Image (cartoon, rainbow, N blue to C red; front, side, top):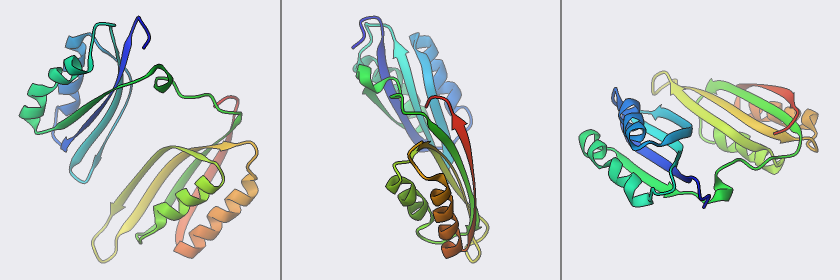
Length: 185
């Protein structure tokens, strides 16, 4: 590990409620930890959060876990702390490529996420963010997907777009995608 800092990934899961982020960030502030990166979402009524933090060199996995004991009991949360290696801290730099943003909208049916993500995987496209939502009632649910990905320069983006259009037609959904040149991913 880096002799000046220790890095940890923290996973939080539990029933949603006001103030969870404040409780977690207060505990980390009082610990003297820095939140380097974070993301959280609510899925159904479940709160899910992922944080990457850095601490001073004297902090151990057990010390970080102990900080959350009271919050876990108070809020009925599951919190897992994972110590990171140096190579886990920063994203690996990738070749120059394009940022791809995909929006999907249509009637919900099994296989939507699989078909889109499988196409991207087959083209060596790395998904960097994905969120889905289901709206409406049980008899007529609407599905929305938002996806960000890194498209390598070697990928034929016209064919990728054509393949996405074919998936949209097969699933009877709308897929809109945008490509943007990125200097360095």
